[in-house]
Image (cartoon, rainbow, N blue to C red; front, top):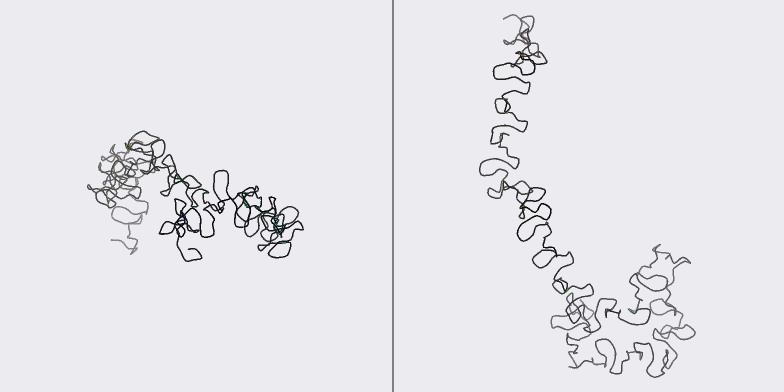
Length: 336
């Protein structure tokens, strides 16, 4: 919102299509109906003779004196030959700058005493330039208010007085919709979301082929919509059921709620009875009770398929009846 209460969009226009100085996109002023405002200045700030409100033209020559100073001996930034400013009567103007466009507060190395950087609190260096080489009053070193491309310090174009040139592009080369003349936004994608090579941000083209694999699925195994071959997305939710399991009751890894796949094996390769696809338990026993590692009914630890050693005791020291080597039950420590 401006000082007069009007609201302007990103392009510098109010709801009626006028910029802050009252000009529209055709450079016509809303009050005068001409290319000049009520004070006689056009959208670039110059009168019909090419002079600004202080009487200086774009070459910094005053219209009455024909020199670089006005009738009172002050130049375009308001200083006389004695380096005194016409409004303040001191060596500094209203903003605290001297006639050499220097800013107080810098040491001999150009470091500002408050910010400890090359720039002061307002973003200007010891010579009065910001990081984009603009002076504080919005001019370049040569005194011009616009750079060689016609843009001002604040991003307004010399021909339109707005943040867009006659072709509709801003200083960075993008139109009001955020696309450059080639049709791409600042991220490099067109209106449909594809880059100049035809791929979107997820690296799929319009045909749904991945840039790297040149197939329907990327290196993560997901398609252009983010689903893998079994219909699960990156968050492991299924496209149809919207849950953690598909229509057949299997999760993204292919296991049911009990932890078994469609072939009946768990993640370690054993079925519900504890046998692998070759018919052996984790300890190497077959259904016949013979261990595959030594061809006996005992494994390498000396226990059988049920966990009992040759003497008939398990690793707790109990036999099949739950008695210890003394023939007693541990709980009662008595004979049966």
